Length: 507
Image (cartoon, rainbow, N blue to C red; front, side, top):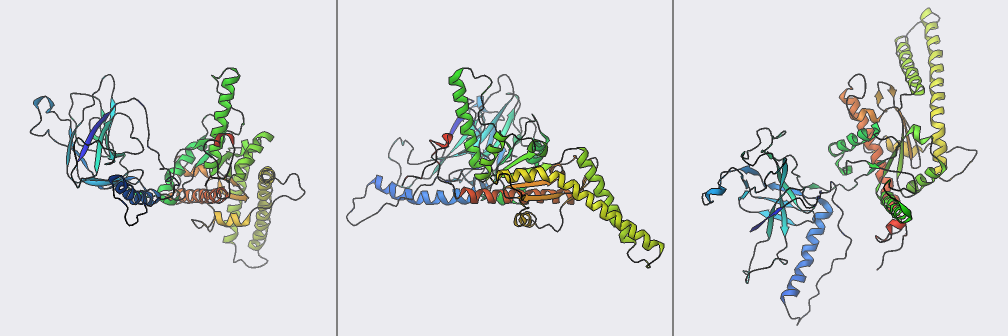
């Protein structure tokens, strides 16, 4: 059995990219003893336990979507249809199975013919055809139901995006009420009035380590945002356990934020409370903060203090030195010279001692050593302020000894989940990687290699893949650190999360 409901644009809703984890509630088993009177209510309560277990299993291990079938095609109107409805706006939904957000199975056991009733008024509209679960216990029966009834589903036609509880079957962009619907000739680029099946989600294993990325930048549209988005979009194919939201959050290190439209003490207090609530949410959600080098070395004491809160709560900080500055250009030139010297020395390996070629080799060796020293001096100048920042974030204060790089973290960044014998080599030279507790510094435009057409010449596929895999290694370690640090945090009440008040969970 199925029901039909048509929704119109009263409110906008979107389905989450990453479904929420199931609520932490104890399973309540109905305890049966001899002599207990069996009623309909008790019967339902007993069976709710098993339904709850099933939903908990699906919601914990799977993401919602289509299991099989549920194809959609345009069909002629049924023969019994009145003449005024005999148009080319009929579709057929084929049998199949889906699982919704909370783990309810949706079983369509026979083809269903369905007419699209939405109409274009002033401008084109998008119609969504979705499937939703109907609780048989909640249904209002017109009479006494049969002893055995099928679980029901509902086919919804709506002109707003699907709700999180619904499974999308297709969408159609309507531009005319007179033109008929049609099957998509090009399924990857359907035209208006054609069925669009590109947004159907197949059921799949749930990502157990999804990572949320936040960007700290004063620029209105920093290039890093697009590059980070490209990396997050590649995660699903390269390392699915990390797949999560592909949107990059904008993080502000200012404590007190007010909206430009706010006026008066009450409005400012409300805006401040909203900003603090959002910041508290970000503290528990964002696993990796990304900050350009130029802005990292210019942080104020108040911003460093706020950043320290993120690090303490589990977020990792990625700083990229990739600006087209004179220092980076000079470093790139030095690396090119070093590579040329190494190539020349390789050609002179087997020369006779005392010969002119031997003297040339010794001269080239001295130049290579001098070039290596210049590179190390340049890197030391770049690393020094970030090392001091890492020291401050760790709460060490001003000490005589600088914190040494975290060798265990550096090893993890180049071994898990992808193994690196050497770091990616970009047109500007090799990438350099330094790490301290909670802080990672990348010297070189690594993020530029996550997207195409960021360099003068196209990059080889192997270079792009290598850069993406190193980026995924950074995401992985950030997510792992975030999970372990969060596991040691006290439970935060939902009613006081915006105030930063933490208290133990009630039992």
